[in-house]
Length: 90
Image (cartoon, rainbow, N blue to C red):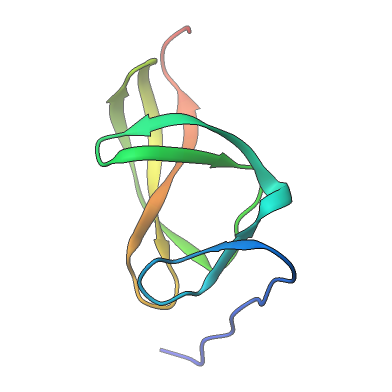
């Protein structure tokens, strides 16, 4: 494993709740009206300092979607998911 280079953001931002690594700035927030199996979920236009897992098909409230889980690059905590493809018409 090599040296970890983190992107530092300016201004108001969202951070990892476990290690406070910068993830997104407030201006990149698109919507707070999403829900996931653990509670509230936010939709962002852009995030940094994350890595993704394997693609998987997951049943969501709007149908079946191909998604990848998203993890904090510093501590490895699950911070969300990213849509890859929608399999059903919504």
